[in-house]
Length: 126
Image (cartoon, rainbow, N blue to C red; front, side, top):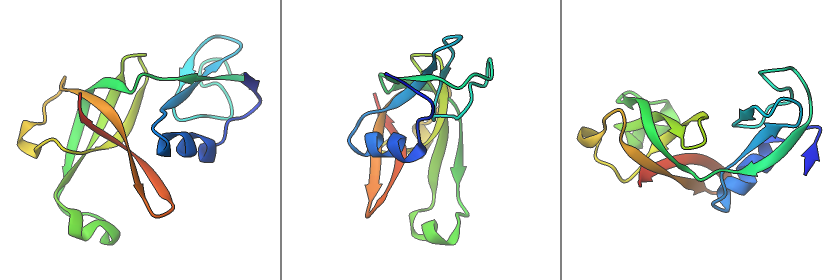
């Protein structure tokens, strides 16, 4: 399916249902996540939605000890840059992994994090 634009709301709706999707440029084949209006590689606007494995490794992480007010009761927690098996990277919250066990290269798997009407990306043990 080729579309002129894939919205972030569509991306997060799929994530809420447990599907992690990206978009592949119909022009040059570059893969992007989350969806973008224009291809960062060639500037074209034509996408094919692709389902991603959700499997990857931690490329970098940080532990949040002084969070924004809305997350004050959840600190400390970690946010990681995850390189997916398909080669693209995305940020997500680390769940179900002790903070002292986090290392670059640790295998992780996508987990949707849903609360009320909001969905965010999480990554837990592979």
